[in-house]
Length: 106
Image (tube, rainbow, N blue to C red; front, side, top):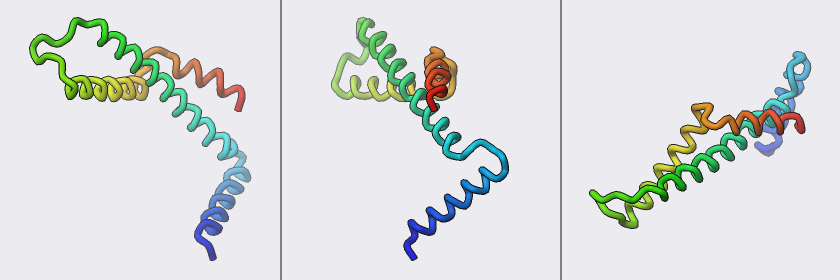
């Protein structure tokens, strides 16, 4: 017996059990989780763009100078910071707004 068929049968059994219990369908819950993650990612992109713009407006680093390595490091740090801000905090409210608007179409 193929392992994929066994996994599919287990997933179908779990889904039917959840539906019988009167809870929300598992598919809708999964779609909402994916939508939240997508909205979070979009907000992270916007925050990263803002950070990049702010960093570009500063005069630079006189102490260490500008190097390719330092620019890569700053870019990676900005990306990490944007993802953390979007994931943990209500930074701009864009994530929640998008989620509420797009949830209606599920």
